[in-house]
Length: 232
Image (cartoon, rainbow, N blue to C red):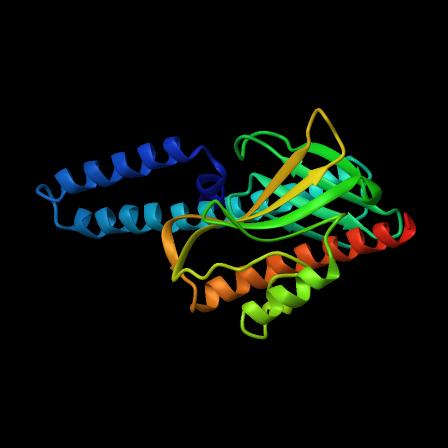
């Protein structure tokens, strides 16, 4: 169909074609009123195809993480693609592996990094460029208990196994930062929130994002504690 071809063609070319048709129809209105309807038809087609193109683009972007994992023969039990589509994380519990993927822009292929559970040194949640909680191989269990009391009872759930929580009313950025035993690439970051507009911390959006990042942080915290037991 013509509409499908318009949706899948280059965005700039599509806008040029339909907007040109719109302008031609606009000037022809002065010749015959029937072009008035055609003018709005081209305008509606421009808006519709742009919306559908954006939806299709987003679907393809979201599938890019699965494609990268498949390409690298990584079977994920769970995975997450960052809100800016530039980084991702996946886990295979049977193989004791975590995959970190990153790229500079959405047109690039993902760089694939495979990390063994035993090589993870630290996991941290960074909010607005400040570390609000972290767990490391040397984290003390007592630190988690104290952190939970200071955070008002729910700190043990929110803060993970150790660290502190600093309250702010709004958030621009939430990042999961992993430190690994690799001198070449010792740190990997996955942005769960990276916004130009501050998100209220009492909003459903923030709670959903924090729930996602905290789940991954707690999962890696458990991995760190298990590694600690194996080494003692």
